[in-house]
Length: 107
Image (cartoon, rainbow, N blue to C red; front, side, top):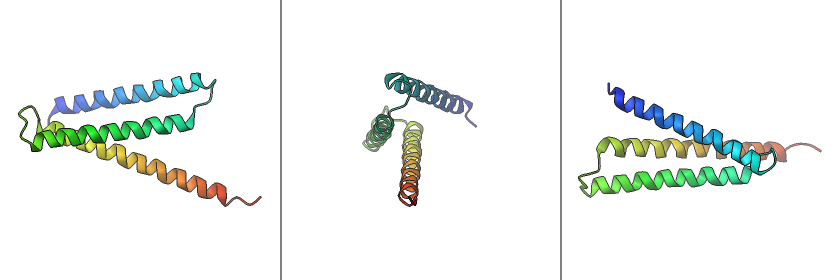
């Protein structure tokens, strides 16, 4: 088992977690205590899009035979893009469910 790869992945996860925490704090301070949901959602979608484009670029470079492209890095980037997209799909599903719940409330 490659401990260097695991350590690298853990450091990436920790950095992402720290960024998410700082974004929440910045959003709360910018809106006077409450987070701007639309802005957070837009930022998240943009980040998922950027991750997917980065993975596609690495995959294209590897397929073109670029000597600097590493198969491990390509696979990790593709998996990150897949996980982030699946996470966004789950958030969307929860939002749709919440919307339906609100719409079905009897007044």
